[in-house]
Length: 135
Image 1: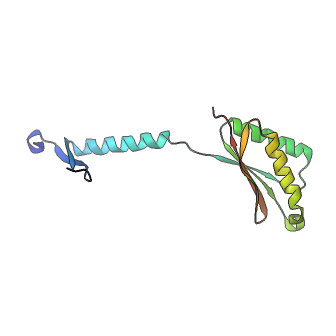
Image 2 (image 1 turned 30 degrees about the vertical axis):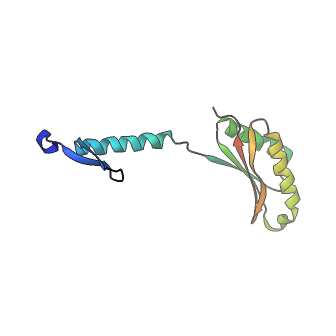
């Protein structure tokens, strides 16, 4: 049948019982397949993570400044990765870093929810905050 019409016989799903074939131009079939893949790829949500870095002795003004940035990121629909970086002997002040991150999470309570509580990984104490309501 395909030969008479001047088209190709394309196997659509070989695992089906019986296998499904279609009489179609093979180039058109490939084009449709690529188009479907592109469409599903564009619909998938891309997660962007913005980082905010603190020191264990971050001052009040710096904290507020970084907090405003975090609120902006969360309102734009991005995740925020806040971390305290400990240099040298400042690793002794782990409690300060944890208190700072918990305070940060408390300030962001209205616009975001804590995905991962502060956790020490090497010289960094990391916390993730994701947006509550996406635009």
